[in-house]
Length: 65
Image (cartoon, rainbow, N blue to C red; front, top):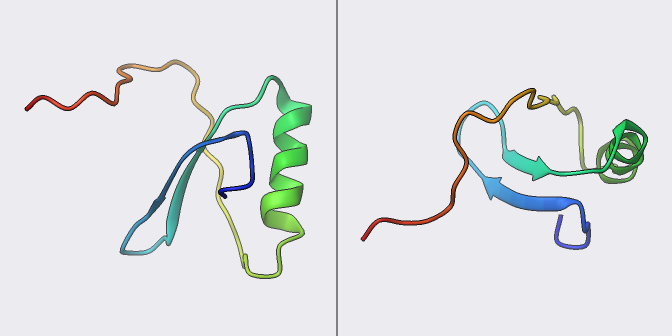
């Protein structure tokens, strides 16, 4: 994920899935190209599920200390 410019965030997580990847693209064609390169043509990836954000409810990365 480090080499992909469309990847905004990538988290290794425990449980049923292994990684959560946050990706931003300009359009669906660019997203399809990303998934083809990062997941479909990657021999290390068995499967993936995509979720598309329709409307962000709350977005932020600031930490309150």
